[in-house]
Length: 511
Image 1 (cartoon, rainbow, N blue to C red):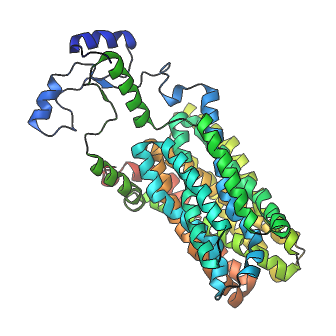
Image 2: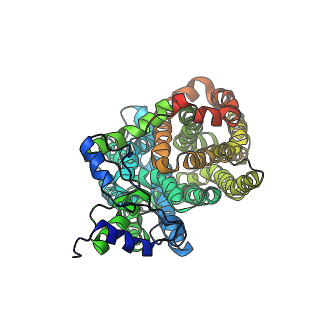
Image 3: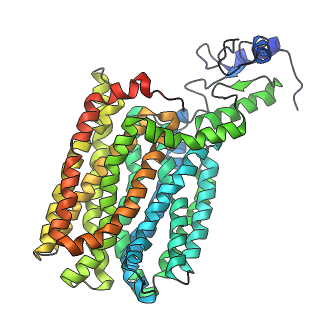
């Protein structure tokens, strides 16, 4: 172990380690984190190099300057898990008729809840995962939640009644929310602002593939092996991904990575006075309480975050409503067999794929163009939301009235494609905007909107069957479309006033 050396010697050693534009900065007596005379006096004794930051290009610790292969290795294994976690409800939705044959529910609400409860788990999971990832880093949360996802998938597979299955579906959703909650933050950690749109679109590929192939695979798997094999498959896939995590996943959260750098320099120099530029002089209890409260503060005290959360919650709840009712509608209205019912989900899957691909191609190009014009700001990410807000009601009108009049089955599936397209033009712009606007707290901001939309989408679909029974598929979906139309002005307002609201001192709450 290195022996302690003087501050002068430390300065000479560190001067050789950094260039003139390095990130080491003075820690003078004006440090705001020190509120006692003793701490202030101590800070005056430190050398000018006692605060350590990233050194810019060439700093192997800084995730932004990692090699492309290393960054893409991290991104792709996270994207793989974003494929697996939503695969569970999408496969299970088409296997639901098999489940209800084994466990006929006492109340019809349970038949919807057994799928939508996963969304409820997706809502509650970020309340813990997002703040902890900004306290302890992303890596440990990715590993722990992957292992828990395997455990809860096995528990679903061996469930002996419907209530037990619902409980473990909820817990599975909590664990499965990790890559969705932290994925945007991981992108913010590693990539520049003009690269993030396409990278976040990569994270969306997984959920898209699950919608394209999950329901079809779920219906065939349930018919051939039984519905329990849906969860056995999830456990196997998640377990394999955890192995890949061990090979490729690395810590990316800046404050945790920088703390590792500080510790390395401490070991080299013996100077125990070194501290991270991002270090906060707070007790662990205080940091934990601040981190746990942060998503709620962002949701309820930041008007832009709340407004966007409400808007995307509407679109996301429509997605889950379709996910839980499409099979029953096409079995009842079009006499589809249980073994092929999964094909009815292809429309919404193809629509979401088209939305993600178009966003990934155009969003970063648009932002780079604006940057060349000297107009760089996160709000430009929200432009596709206008088209998304129009596409969803169009799809609902087509789907609702086509099924009402018994038009050929391809037409209502085409309508669900417009809903999927619109959903991606809502979801991806919002996630990318939050990453750009709040990069240090990307996980908390995305977690805040995820919580809200997941809770809404868990309970709103429960009203779907009674609404369809009372109003019919035509007017029932029209009511949903009219609600979506009412939200079309929201992105227009944020495009015009969002920056002013975001920078208003009245909304600059300490996070």
